[in-house]
Amino acid sequence: MRRGLNARSRVELPDAVFDARLERLRAAMRELDALLVYTNNTRPAAVSWLTAFVPYWSEAMLVVPRDGPLVLVVALTFRVKPWIERTCRVAEVIHSPRIGIEAARLIAGGKADAAVGVVDFDHLTAGIADDLAEAGPRLDLSDAGDLFAAVRARADPAELMLTGQASLIAARALSRVGSRKESAGEIVAAVEGEARRLGAEEVYVALAPDLARDHRLMRMEGERALGRRFSVRASIAYKGSWVRRVATIDRDGAILDAAEAFAGAVAHLPSDRALSQFSSFLVEGRRTAQPLEALMGSRVAKPHLPVAGSVVSVQACIEIEGKPILVGAPALVGAPGEAASIFPQE
Image 1: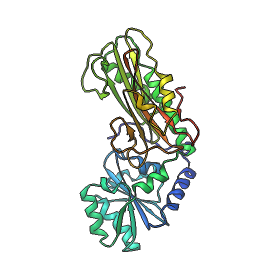
Image 2: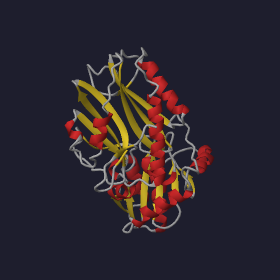
Image 3: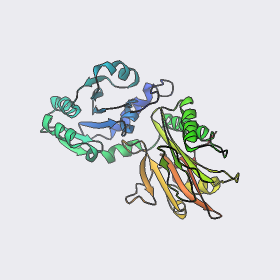
Image 4: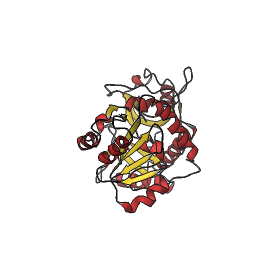
């Protein structure tokens, strides 16, 4: 369940933003009669991008006809209908415990043999896929993940603004971590508390508590002993835009600054040649339903190169004078011939 405030800002996300995104999507739906987009609290990004709806819990299915109003089918009780209507840019909200049945009925009622694209079809649960087939036995269902990713890839001005704000929140939250003798629990509390104070709707904090032993960032459960050098990662959501930032702290007071090397490597995106020189790296982006999907990295078997104009979050382990330094920040991939740039911290 999400714990942060989720309230739509019509200043930051006016109706015109969603109208333009829907127009782009429908222009790509030439061979489809409708599109279905599933969402839950772990896969909110696609529906959020189209409507601003982010589920705190449960699940929903957005029905996008090639012509006509958007309908959101939610497996939530009727009592949350006013909240959804306040925060969501759709024409109608339908409540049903079996969202696949209701979504298929809506489409099949207009055209029994409609061609229907399903974003991330392979990630649907078997139960929902079976319900779609049951209620729409003649519907021609196909995966529309690549179609949606191509439309979604390039960030519009609203998304750039929200990403910049999320990046600032993450940087300011991480600035609360110092070299003084704080416990792991105190660090997590300080980062999360500051991020939420600044308006983050969700915060996940991870630590590599002792870089001399292990470079892996992990969610803390219980107290952990901190080494002389440790790293903290803040994953922040602001108005549906997710970013990650990573900072490394030396408790002996030494300055661990890999920013220049990191920025120089990120500038070469979408090529990963410069990043590949580091001990490890990961580039995450927004393709379909996951807020941050692994696009390429040291351990990514099937890379998806980010396109020009897309927003990504990059993490790397850089060794300077034998010391591993974890660093990470969101970045904007430049147009061909232009360098990618990291979002500023201030």
